[in-house]
Amino acid sequence: MKEEFLHYIWQHQYFGKTDLYTVEGEPVQVLRVGMYNTDAGPDFKEAIIRVGEVEWSGSVEIHLRGSDWRRHQHQLDFKYNQVVLHVVWEADEAVKRTDGTFIPTLELKDRVNTALLQTYEQLRRAPFAIPCAGFWPQVPDITKTMMLGRALTERLELKGEEVLQVYHQLGNDWEATAFQVLCKAFGFKINQDPFERLARALPMQVVRKHQHDLFQLEALLFGQAGFLEEPTYEYSTKLAKEHTYLSRKYNLHEQAMQRHHWNFLRMRPANFPTVRLAQLAALLHKYKSLFSTIIRTEGVRNYDALWQAPVSAYWQKHYTFGAESKAVQVQLGKSSAQNLTINVAAPLLAAYAMYTDQLEHLDKAVDLLEKVKEASNRITRQYEELGWKAASAADNQAALGLYKRYCQPVNCLRCAIGNKIMKQNLPTT
Image (cartoon, rainbow, N blue to C red; front, top):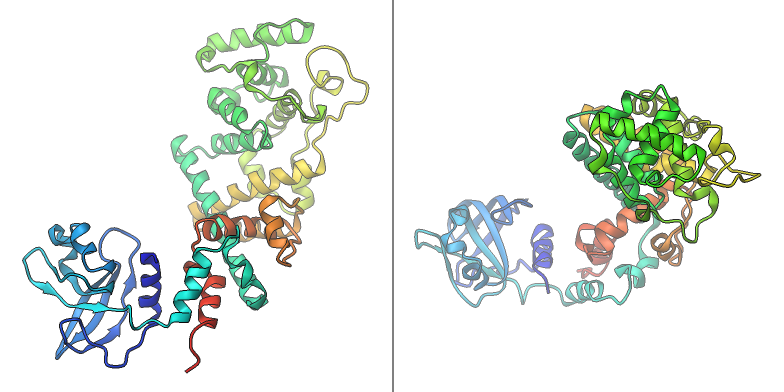
């Protein structure tokens, strides 16, 4: 058993109240459970408990054993002087405040329904990636739908918070933030790390000064990415010369990457990092204010079009530096464009909504995800095996949020689906 189970039992008052006494023999009445506290200090604050003839207002601390109080050194911590009731599974030791006064203890081990405890243990020890897989069919669809909706919102807010961290790190610059988020997404998993590193190796302040010139943008991107170290072709030699000049001007040399950081193996030529860099340069050239464009764009089709920008003449005939290719796919494919909508537009919209307190931007992000398709993955397929079907990127993102925040850490007691399963196993009388 974990302490979280006792938190759950106390919060919902799922224990027998008949002849409720402290271990010291005083009658107990719970007038107010208190507010669950996720910060440092007692587990529940602002509770109201009647012990004997005295009504107490204060905090409730919960442990598996009474001796955990001493083990956690609460008897030395002034934050716990407000505790008016110590709730434990097993009362093996009386506890005191810092001033030596005793705190009444309530023991629960003989007051919790066995079926409830068994259900909790079944979820906690389930041999499945999704702990409630064995209970899934008995949970109403409305509960699943509501929980997935909550998981989607939480996932968007989490991504928004991550974007805001970048925003503050970059001196509250939205365009620089959009550049970093875009670079990370342009890696499309296989080259995500190198693209993130590239964004750090090439400050947006430098990019801004050369967005009017596609050739200079390519020189900066390919040079900082490490593809111009030993140029052997006419075009790469020209880019290398320009990069050398710009690198000296802006003191970029120490941040430059090396070619071996990039992955080409088992990739279609259209996905080569060289092609992605050319496409990124084209986007930065097309949109002088990329962040503003992303925030203002309306409709899925317009977002699909937003990510398309004409690459330079050289990259219309090449996948890498060197030999020409007859049929080069120079535009982002539809799935790649939708991937950018999911991983760039939606998080930026969520972050902007949180920053400005304009929730319409968050609604817009959700609406976008509901209208975009996204391929299933290892995690979403596990839910599909239980009978759930994803109809959009919103469904996929909701499933990812549910899995990572609730299923993977076995956080069932904080999940509406887990709660429903627990309640269904409560006694009916």
